[in-house]
Image (cartoon, rainbow, N blue to C red; front, side, top):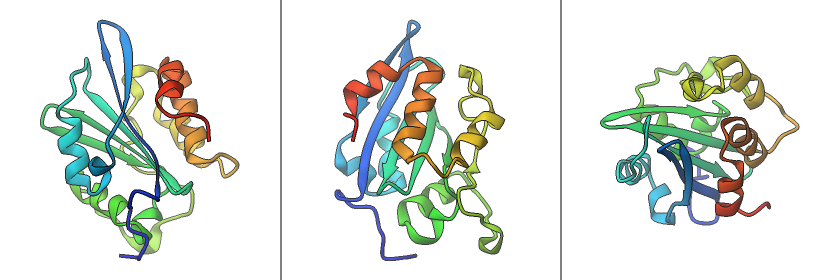
Length: 163
């Protein structure tokens, strides 16, 4: 992998988002939870939530990771598939969910992983693919769009100040 391993300075934000009794809660994650995909998944398993918990991680204004933990089942999306070539955390997430990637077929700004990650919350895979492919948006803007569409933008904004 590349030298761009995720560290405290490359993580723009890391939050857990979950719903209980129809209300969203968003909590900032500790820096240690983003040192590896295993630590991220282990941290997410500690949260409650109807339909599981989402981990949203922005990395160096380059891409975001969305990991959905439901019991022992882990689903994930990497907003820019080429991130697995340069970022250890992205490559580890791809491994955790069993993605078999042909590096020669990766395209810039093309998401990889589970595009239906948010479908049961009203954000379908086509819309998500279009959002991830929008080269004019930074990862935090993409995540804020997801949060607005799913109904937890105020909670997200409180957890991660606009940058």
